[in-house]
Amino acid sequence: MAGFLLYMSMTKKCIYSKFIDMKNEIMKHKWIESEKAGKDIGFEKALVDWIEKHRTGWVTYKIK
Image (cartoon, rainbow, N blue to C red; front, side, top):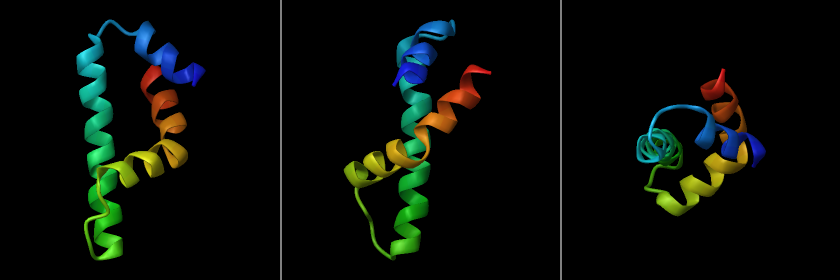
C-alpha cells in the first residue's frame, strides 16, 4: 500500500491520469484472464486478482 500511495503522490501527473493508467492495466488483465477462462470474468474479479498479483510490481515499475 505504501508504494501505491507513493506513486499517487510522487509523480507530476494528475491523479485522474494515474487512475486511467491503472484502469487500463486492469482491463488488459481482465481480457487475458477472460481469454484463459473462456468467458468474461468480470471487472471486480479482474481487479482483485490484479491487485493481489500485479499491483506491487506495476507500481514499483512506474515510480522508477
